[in-house]
Image (tube, rainbow, N blue to C red; front, top):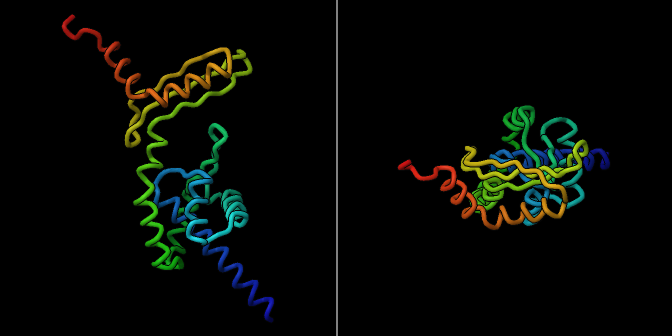
Length: 185
């Protein structure tokens, strides 16, 4: 009987922790990386690292979370199924935990969102033996500018991505000036 009670408590904690993760990702309103999720879970001592990895994998398997990988970084986003489960069970998340999540979102959302406003990624294209680079600037889900370039080496692709991120404001301004040209012509 004692083992069954421990098992039930463990399962409740697992379910509650999964809800906590769904709630966090949903409140942030943008996909979060493993490290961003870990930062919250570990700082607040809610979930240990290994359990966190298992919970994320479980929720991807049951399609509560969508997992995507971009430049060796894994992102998680809540699916419609995950939102339905969250809506149904979010009463189980203690209000003090919800408040901590809301505070974490307030303090970190701006910095996390900045990572999404400027992008620079490269991909190897086997069929033409080149690297395709995609650079972009976004503001509140609006595309301000996107560039797609091809280069022959990985080193060139890395340099272009690095320089795009480092000089994005100047590049954006220079490109606009060049494209607009002399308005009096």
